[in-house]
Image (cartoon, rainbow, N blue to C red; front, side, top):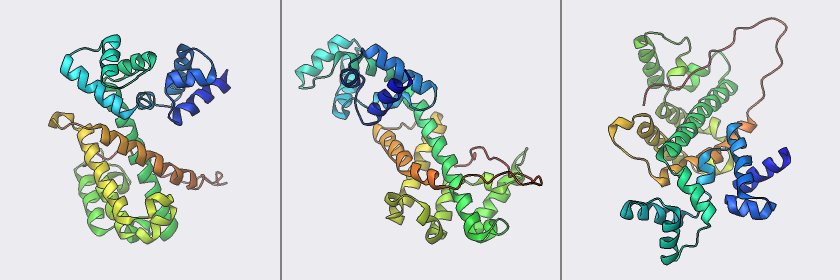
Length: 267
């Protein structure tokens, strides 16, 4: 039933592991996982949401045991964890081992970064248009050096976009927020607008993580702390998207729609 599927997803969001959800709903873990995977397929959850319900210290210990002893056999790991003072449900452990592959983490990190980047771009543009008007927001709200960077990138693009804002990077957005904090911050959720420097620092860190994930050949690695940061920033920013105005009804006369931007290529 759909209601059971949604209940399982909601319990997961509240931090319950699959085995805990099964006990709460009085159903087998296999059924819980079927519900959760259905929600993942529909885009309501990520696989890492399941992965991160396991206690952080237990996850850290599991990874240390795998590295030191070279085994991912569930019953062996559970015995070693028990000897170290960690009690992990056997079914939760098997699910963790199935989902712990780095490809899961990095795939979900990419999705989080993509969502954040596109959402921040949309938020900034809408806020600037609201503040300065549809005709003046680019010149009035975007610093000159950012406009110049975008114009240069546009000139070098073999298939240039018609909208220069498409070339803004996260660092450009940071500069726009810095210049227009009084105009942009009121629309941010309270936790993010409370401290300007902390928010700008979070954008710097987001950009650094983005560069690691988007350029894996450089050899840098992302940490679990980076993943936590992305998940938290994504959750903190989500209310801002809900507050953005809904598109107006279609006008009687057709109007030219603005170009939809893909992710900027620059760092």
